[in-house]
Amino acid sequence: MANAQPVRIVRHGVVDSTSERAFAELAAGRARHGDVHVAAAQTKGRGRLGRNWHSPAGEGLFASFVLRPERAWNPAALTIALGLATLDAVRALGLDGASLKWPNDVVVRGAKLAGVLAETRDLDPRNPAYVAGIGINVRQRAFPPELCAERPVTSLALCGIEATVEDALRELVEALPRRCAEIEEDVGRLEADFLRAAGLERGHVRVEVASGTITGVLARFSVAHGIAVRREAEPEARFALEHVRGLVAV
Ligand code: BTN
Image (cartoon, rainbow, N blue to C red; front, side):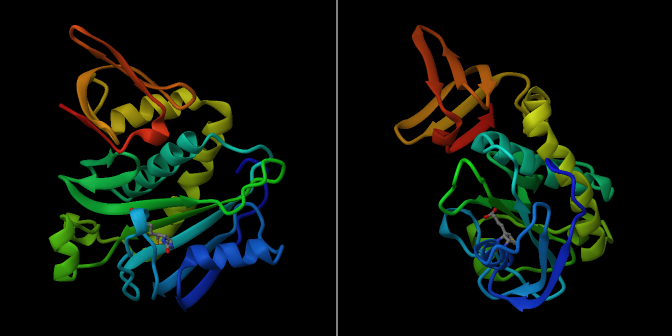
């Protein structure tokens, strides 16, 4: 991790949300960089965009990492680093064919396998702290119909990988510090690996922003400077990454 301290794994039984537990420890002044809160099950697992994260006992990895770098991180770099770390972890378990979907869903043939929720509360740039909540579907053989109605979902087991939740945790604890170090040391690698992992390196993309959808050639992808899309007979379109809602290859 950014400041080298041993990883502490804090194990919970059934909790509301591992990210909530991580924030509680931060608020109490007890949280160290690299702490990982892991639960057997969550009753209020949080997903992105206000969604719930289905968290049945023993079936998935529900982990929240406390990240306390010395200097605040670029939010887009953190978003990409966490997605890549999750992808690295499932690849290390033997899964081929997984990719990233903007911003950091891990998907297999369009079905969601894992998700990431990076959060801060009252970010103090002099003492930054983030909670990176990561959920990986590990052993599920079926999902509730209401979840499947929202979007296709999958698990490592359904992809033919007989890993345990503990295996997934081990690989994530291994991958995440490496990717977080790249935020400070090699952001170009994060950008290039993200483009490859999301199948965007060929360049033709569709970008979704609040004002609509733009199609063209991805001329720039930079966590510092955002994206630029070249279009025929129209000015180049430029967006900061935090304004990008969707980004897919076409
Ligand atoms: C997403 O919607 O894709 C993000 C899902 C993040 C789920 C994880 S599970 C561990 C941590 N605790 C939570 O309440 N949410 C995250």
